[in-house]
Amino acid sequence: MHLTKSTEQAICIMVMLYMQDRRIYLNSKEISERLDISPTYLKKIMRKLVLSDLVLANTGVGGGYKYRQNKVITLYDIYKAINGEVNLFVLQADYIEKVFKGAENMTSRYKDYLKKINTINLSLKESLKQITIEDIIRDILKKTADIRIDWNNWEVEFERLYKKLKN
Image (cartoon, rainbow, N blue to C red; front, side):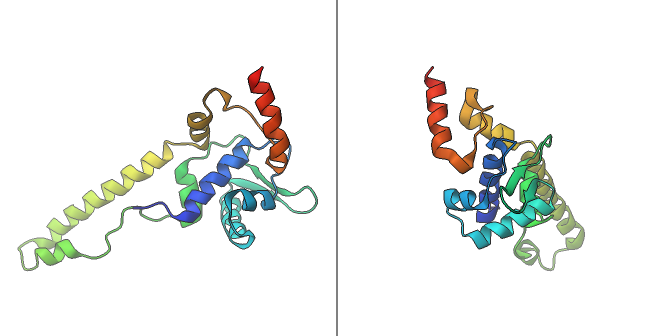
């Protein structure tokens, strides 16, 4: 199992949106530049997040994206939005079946083996469901996790926050 690049990017986008001032839409240009993602590729990721009801989109002047208010979003929600409902731990080939080729009752034994693989998938999914975007932000920002900024004007916002934190 590995985390795809687009899933990792989507998690970072959701972190930005969570921290974004909820009254202001975050424009795609800022996301694209900050994460070094091409605008075309960003649109594909954002479309999946919007269709999965994790993000609100607004077009036009002052448009962009917002975190879906009052929604607890987990890493599994994001994973599923980007990759679809897929197993995280997947056998690439039936090698174990080949090892025991010709053994008696192999079909039922192989099914038992596949049940264990499925248990791994269920455990991974449950683990991802336990971690929220808010958890990630709290782990990184600690006591300042409740801050909201306007990423569209991040330089001014960072300066404001540094002054506030010094006092």
